[in-house]
Length: 106
Image (tube, rainbow, N blue to C red):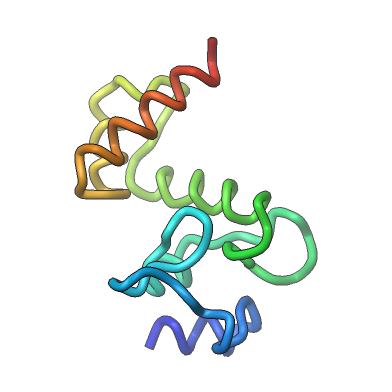
């Protein structure tokens, strides 16, 4: 139902909703429910396009993490570690994001 809501909202056409085997879509792999709930139109074109718009994808990912309790800049505090776990249950993805985040602030 969430995928249909995303299409009905005008964010992504149904034929463009291609993703991985579990149904995740976009540059940062949102499930349809999360796409509908957390996607934002950061590039200002009137659509929340996590497939073709890097600004929308990155801003939506930040919004998603904030929705799971992200606070401040450090990924090492307890709330942010829990937010990463909410984003993706796989430890390898949590560690990869944390690594790249630490490289960005250097």
